[in-house]
Image 1 (cartoon, rainbow, N blue to C red):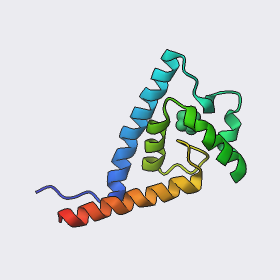
Image 2: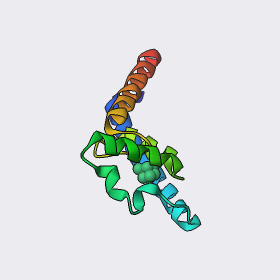
Image 3: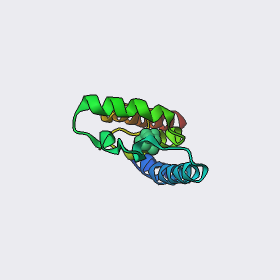
Image 4: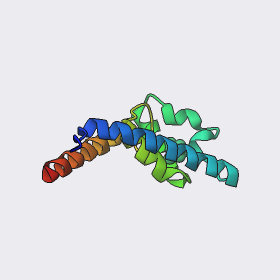
Length: 111
Ligand code: SF4
């Protein structure tokens, strides 16, 4: 019988896969010439110190060809250093908490 991974460990494993998927999506975007908003002239907005600027940066993420992969990575990694995947740090923390709760519930049901 295989021991179950605790939710935190499962998310850590998901982090590596999500990071790889994000890197692939960003490479595909670069090859196709599609712009990635956080890599343009306004890049500092994605790591700004003030919440208002981060909210605006997160809105610009909606045009990104790597949006879904970036969002998955940010939640799996628990990124809180700026805007990722159209989310502010507070939104990422909430999404991560929800993901951990869902994994815990699934593990409880399967036990
Ligand atoms: S979705 Fe991610 S990669 Fe795309 S602009 Fe936003 S932070 Fe950058």
